[in-house]
Length: 323
Image (cartoon, rainbow, N blue to C red):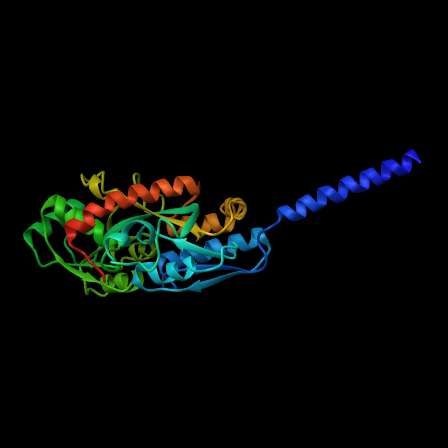
């Protein structure tokens, strides 16, 4: 009788344990939707797709990537903000979406402070200051000297109000030069314009620049990271060359709709942290010049707040507006 009672108690405890484990597995509840609010093949898309593959390996569920581009990321972000708060919709965000666009648009179509819960920063990406091979400048100092001598240099960007555009405006303001700004619709078109000689210089994210620099299609004169990049060891930083004002690494993160329960957010963060340790993801990020990160939601919120304050002044000084 005693043995039977022991077996019954043990069975009940086991059932209670497994029931607790099962109840804890509240996410995911099927395929996860990952919204990338920029076009395919751009730097955010490259990062997001590498992340999606790693996340799928962790959660053993499909991660369906949806590119919802437009208005500097606002279109896709607005779609994500209206999604159900069940953790099944995740949005890849950039500084523009959470920190910069608020100063450029009368309305983003959502409230970046209230409509999302921040989960994690997953990557840091420096920019490159690049020129067409025909430009007679071997470094950033020579480029600035050329811009002082010529006010008609065509400087490209991925669009008005993008980080590349604002860093260009910051540099021009600080060193007292001018140029003709030529905005494009995204990173890919801007880089192709530089390769084709439509513009003479470009500041933009480093991923697509690395290969083009290595084969001589463009010249990267400086990187905006605090230290040199191992992918481009011979390219000095902007700070090394006397231009610390444009030291900058764009951050990329994931957020979910604000109605998502904290318990679900915690599970997504835990899964994301595991995904960021995936060897294939780390190799892909290294190739692209991206530093993998696992900063939590609170740290991400602080970064977004600091970036918002930093770029507000630059936007106002540049006069850039998008309505």
